[in-house]
Length: 293
Length: 133
Ligand SMILES: Nc1ncnc2c1ncn2[C@@H]1O[C@H](COP(=O)(O)OP(=O)(O)OP(=O)(O)O)[C@@H](O)[C@H]1O
Ligand SMILES: [Mg+2]
Image: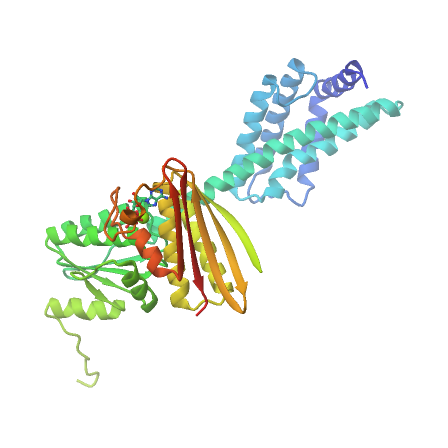
């Protein structure tokens, strides 16, 4: 197949796009409205119309510059950007990847209907134009899909970060006693942040006892141990004593084999034990209140 | 019979994945909770050394099954600067960085078998085995 031949076909599709922009837009919009993936709860009819028209108008102006309809060419940058933006906003709005992709894939139906009308008498040209149409819509689909994937990755990363922050609140148990329940993986960056927030809170509240609970920490290696020891020393300098609790038996054995010395750190097996110790140090006791009295 | 997996070690997240994979293989090999914790912790130490001192590398994880004995072998490899004095590196408390200097010797104590092979300018290979007890 010669290049000249292909170019003629593609020029045909681009010509049709340019000449019938308005009709294609309406056909596309009604096609979308009839899809199962149509989600009026997430996107209003007006927005759908605006987005479709805006994208199609970018497509036709790019088609004027590049009739070969090759999305990799610079003429299509504005189209790619707009499509990415729309796809991104849909992914963030809660459309599933399939629903988001159906936005551009439904353009195929609208285009093919139009091609059929135009090439009614010319099966050969119709077949060629259909091919170009498929290739073109597939390229749009790829832009959408990769944007959706990227958006999801960003979202997951953000959620992970939020979860990290959420899972490490410094709580005040009672007057002068703080508790830091650590949960999850303790790697350098995060541990640093968590430990600093504990020290900060010690200063703010003038607490004298801080319980660091590691029940939710799956692995205590030398790095975690080092962070714990540093925090304990820093807290001590600020006048607070730390109790490390939640050291499960298997962790205790492992720490011993590692050779980490927690000699001058108060340790307790459970948070309850640590709490009892903290109360004792503060001169407090828990008393059962007689309901009858 | 052995089954091997290889994981890259180039980021902190890779270390987390090495720990997770080690834990899951240790469970599949029937190791008890204490031994699982030991091998996971040793893996964490060696993976971090691979990243921090070896400049990154990979680990090969193998489930071992010979003569009715089940176990797990982890082999950490890097093409970093190597270790000039292995005896010194294995001494408790020795660190050329800012660590506690307990990772390498600790990993040895936490495992049943420990082999280290290192050449200056070529890289380091550390291999450990934990047998089901
Ligand atoms: N893969 C490696 N490549 C080059 N040098 C290494 C490697 N592994 C360990 N070393 C050297 O051996 C020393 C001791 O290692 P070890 O893991 O015992 O201590 P650390 O990593 O310095 O501190 P810790 O592990 O206690 O946090 C390191 O400081 C480093 O100089
Ligand atoms: Mg180390």
